[in-house]
Structure formats: C-alpha cells, structure tokens
Length: 596
Image (cartoon, rainbow, N blue to C red):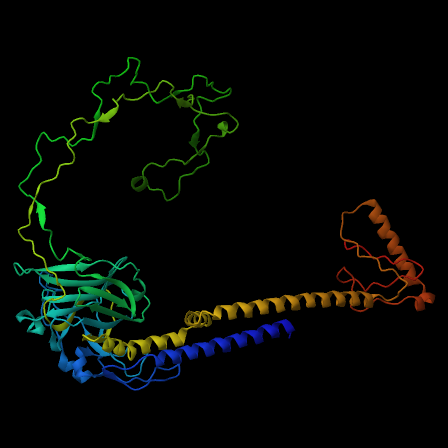
C-alpha cells in the first residue's frame, strides 16, 4: 500500500482515539457535577446498542405536589380519570371525548421498562386528568411545572399542552372534564400548518368584579419546528417566581422569559384612562395637513386631451409589405381525425400555421407605424398642494377615568391549582407524555429531569453522535483544543505535500530508467512515433520508402545477427499488426505512421 495512504490512516486513527478520550472525560466530568435532590434512583450504565437499564424515580413526598412517571400501570389506573363528557357546541358525531389513551413503551424504546401515556387515536376529542397530592397555593414560593412530550409520528395539526385545573366545584368531578373546565395555567406546544407555538396562558382574576380573563404570553424569538418533526423526546419547563417573572425552557434551554405585568396580551392591569365613548369629532374639524392651492389656475396652453403616445410620423412602410396576406393560415396538410364527432366536437377546423408567403417578406397584414411618446402630452392638470392654514391636527376623543381600572401588583398570586389535565384534538396519533411534575423546588425538578429525560437524550446522542459533533462538544468545554486541531491538520497537510512531491520525483526517475531499458541498441537512434496527421504526397512517399526499407531488412537472412527484435512489451500501434523489428544499425529506424 502507498506510504501516503498508510500515513493518513494512522493519523486518522490517532485523531479518533484522542477525541474519544476527550469525550469520555467530559462525560465523566458532567456526571460528577450533579447531585440527587428529592429523588432516589440507581446509577445507570449500558452499551450504546441496547436500551439502557432504568429505575423509576422515587418521589420524596414533601418535594412534589404532583409527580407521574407512568411506570406503574396499577397506580396509573387508580390515579388518572378518562373524561366521559361531551364537548359543547360540537357535532354529535364528534362531540364525545372518546380518544384512546394507553400506557405503554415508546415505539423506539430508549430506557428499559420506561413507560409513557400515549394518545393513540387521531381526529378525536380526548381528555384525561389526575388530582394533585395537595393543592398548590400561590404564596411566596416559586411554581414549576415540567413534562416530556414525544411526537412519535410527528405532528400535522394539534396540540400537546397540559392544563393545570383550578380548585373549585367545577373541577370536582373529573369525569366531566372538558374544554370549559376552569384552569389556571395552560402550557405546552401547539401547531397547525406553519404556525408553531409554545403556549403559556394564565387566567387572571379581576379584583374588582371577580371575572377571569386569559392572558397570552409573547411569542418566543426562537423557531420551534424541530420538536414537531424530529420524533425525539423534548422537555418543557415553566418557572414562575413570586416577583412576577417567568422563564420557559425547552430541553433545559431558555427560549422565553419576561414579566407577568409587561409581556402578556391583554395587559394584566387596564389603563387608568380610556377614550370617552360619548365624545364625537365636530363637523367643522379640519384634519387635512395639505390642500390644493386655491389661487392656482390651469395654463391656457394646457391640453388635457393629448394622448400619451402617438404614431411615429417619420415611419415608412417597408417595400414588399404584403397587406393582403394574413400572418397565419389554415394548415393545408391538416386532416380531420377519423374519430371526430361533429355532434360532440363541433365543426372541425385545420390548425393554423405560419403563412409561407410571409417568410421572405418584411411583413404581412395591415401595416401601422410604431408608437412614440407624445411630446405634447401633459395629462390632467392639478393644482399644486400647499400647507392647510386651517389645519387643526388629528382628532382624538377626550380621555376620561377608566371605571374598570384596577392595579394588581402581584399577578403571580393566581387561582389555586388542584389537578392536571390533558384535553386535546390532534390530527396525528401516538403522542407520548411522560414525567409530569409540579413542584416549588427548582433543584428537585432538575434532579428529576437528570434521571429521566437527560438519560434518554444521552442515550440517543451516544447512538447517533458523529466524530465531528464529538470534536465540537469537546472544544466547547476546552477551547484550547482548537489549537491542537489546527496544529495536527497543518502537520498532516505538510507531510502529505512532502510525500506527494517525493512520489512525483520517484515516478520521473522510473520513467527515465524505463525509457533507457526499452532501447535495444545504444547506437540506434530511436525515432519518436509520428502522430496521426492529414495525408499528403510527402508523407505518402516517406511511408512508402519506410516500407521498402522494412521489407529489405526482413529479406536478408545473412543480416539476422545484426537485427534484434524489439522488446515484447513494445507492440505495433495498429491493432493486429506484428511487432515492429529494428532496422540494421547502419540505417536509421523508422516506424509506420498511426494512420498507415
């Protein structure tokens, strides 16, 4: 094998080993940075080609208001309630909440014995809910909700959000859970067409009259297409702080944040003043900024009837123009199809073709001069515009105190939450929900994700991660590795150039030795092969003389000892001809041309 190829293979292997060791060290370092908090689980290790061993998280009761991993089917059946209600305002055929729910493994198992709640049906209303172990009351602790969604077959149109149901008599019977059941927060992904959303909606209570109004969070700046089509698990997390700030995370990455007081539509607090609904603009109010000059008049020579274009008066019809000949005529060779039906197809007409008489003529049909811009065209006259001396500005109704004004300085104190519900209509089946938790401890939420979602992501990445991604990941942790990579590739490039140059010199030397070895007699001058060229009398005469000399040399048996055959590997240029034989040493050797 070429030494250059061996060198590159060895270098590539060395680079792979170095990057693999860096990746392993970084992974070990990441594992050492985390501690369990509120959840107890075994350490997990497994080969990348198999589903990882997995132990369901054990919930510490004082850490979570709600926690569900769906790995215990018996507990799931006791805890979760499928809605038996009908959707108001929908057709009878589709009003019933009859979507199919099932606890099962993902279509692509990642962790052994890890189950999830799957909405198996599509184009059906589906609703299911479960109560908290204790209600969450918004006081002085943060509120955190977190859950996983895997759109196993993508999402064409529909949501995968959850609702945190308000405490009260309307949420007492969860078998009647519908879209009308009061909720405090709605959170999660939703899509239809090209509109990709991540909802965060909360229902705010008016402190003056007790009415509830939905407040919609501003849209994230990042695009959110990937979770709807990559068929991987994704983690959605919402943090609400007592200082009225919020943070939305997708796979531990912040994609939205802001204030409950400033970043929602409509605003939590209404304006102090509003437009007076009884106020109307006066009839004599002049809000025109500019008007036509009333003193201007149209000039006497202004001709509004002049057309913008006229025929060119200098144009002359070309000689030979055929005025009586049409440009297109019926095809004289056209024939009516044999299956033409007069009743169905109408009267048959031959297709039109170009008139052959117009081929050599400058033109056919009625001649008309070309149009040019009319130098006398001015258009409709209009008076110039001037500032309006009577301008009063843009009219607006006067402001009055808002009778419904209130100021809620702490919208974080929302309606108490008592249950979680999933109420959906989806055009795509096999939506998988997993690891739904509600807590007031950020460390507990992070620890739960570390022992569930993070294991899945690490497993998927280890199965599909490429060499380049390993290099990038290692370099993000240790930027100085870029210098090592540059040095290695510069060294490899330099050595490769050196080997290529050396190889070229060796080839040139080998060609020179081969050319010398092909010569059978040092005193015989080897003539170059004559390239194929056009036949002429001089070439023919030279070729004939060469043939005669060639024949004479073969006809002298007594000169055999002076004649040696050409090397076996030198064949005649013409296929099928015998090997050429050198002429005697006292005569220059000539070869037949390729053409002959």
